[in-house]
Image (cartoon, rainbow over all chains, first blue to last red; front, side):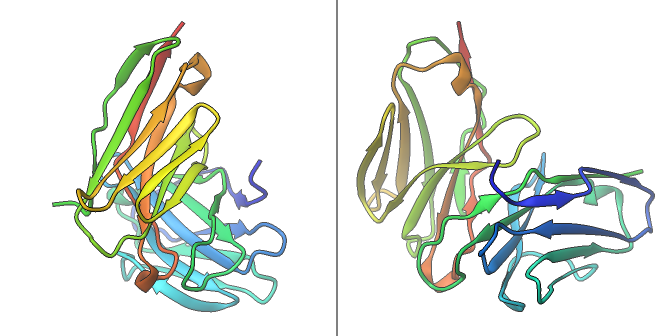
Length: 115
Length: 112
């Protein structure tokens, strides 16, 4: 158990809908990362937050947004869902978010199915 | 062309074999190199990380990085059925903060 929690475990929804994925980092970790894992694209970095502020952005679609709250939990919002958004969404956390190596601990993931 | 290339396998070996997993990359700014293990329906867990070129050993696992060739390897000695998983290489560059770029992952099956 990495100490990172994600809810829900599974989510099934329809095209065009909006969903929110939630992540609680390990106790004391200030940085949260979101990754998407799909069969065709593999594991891809979406976005990073550090102590409430956006720190880095990857190939995140405009339909997707995220935020980190004062208690350091994070939410990933996915809107106008398409079939291709079906994937595993992982949250990871690390102690810091600066420009040095920080081990990232991954949560168990949320499996999103868009029908 | 992807920044990180990794043969997806699957790789099937008998118990006790030495396993070699490899990745190549194109971004010369990468400085940190990691190997993650992912069991089915679980999140990735860090096995080893290496900074810059060189070797690192941890029990049955050895990681090698050759920056001049842009090539990294993970060796598993005396492989066990419990090593059956997907192995993902990952890399990061200081200039990009802590963002990880992953390979596609290699599926490993160790047969007893």
